[in-house]
Length: 308
Image (tube, rainbow, N blue to C red; front, side, top):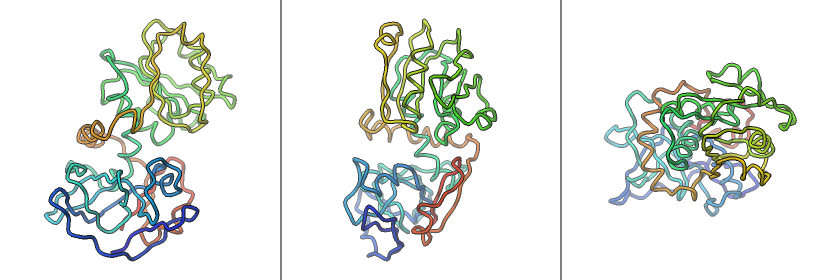
């Protein structure tokens, strides 16, 4: 069987031949892999930089789309052990989800991982949201941020606001309010939010932008802030005056903040929601090209998918 194989955390994976898979156990199903995504999580695990990185030698990849012997197509997750960059995988049946018939395999392989971040942030890391709630997305032009805008509406958001540095990309998005983030985030003009009540902030940025926003924006309604990504920094400094003057709840979203069982429970609904998401830019490579394509530069809005 052919796979991608990592034998050194400092080097990209190589195309390799390994032993064929054993027969699946009674709790597993064997799938022929149709597509698997090169997510930031996959890169991090492949460098040994993530808490969940499997030991070497390692077959990279955490999820994908595959087809069973009977022709049924599944989205599958192998997060706990990794190994989706392969021709075939044995997957626990609890981690295999039948695909909606009108959901594209390539798009699904690319999008479930970035989409789950906002989906779980809203479904598992917020509480008692009002009907027709409002959402502000920090990092709205990122791949995950774009998906978050669409999925938030699916989950009941009436108004979706966005903030990002890329003004032209931001202006192209269907958002109710758009904040162009200044080079120095503290100098961003937050006046479009004056008098606006925000229920949820989904933060893919971190760093000084949320500090500037929370220090500036005042409202009466409870505000729930969910930290998801760190595109601009690993730390956020929050003045104690913000905590005393705002009805603010701060949470993070990721495995640990919610558990695997909670995430698995949400996957079928997320797959159904992705049917209505606008198709995203995808760059496809064959698995044979994994070594040269691993660090290939593509449009920052594009997702990379490998097809065995």
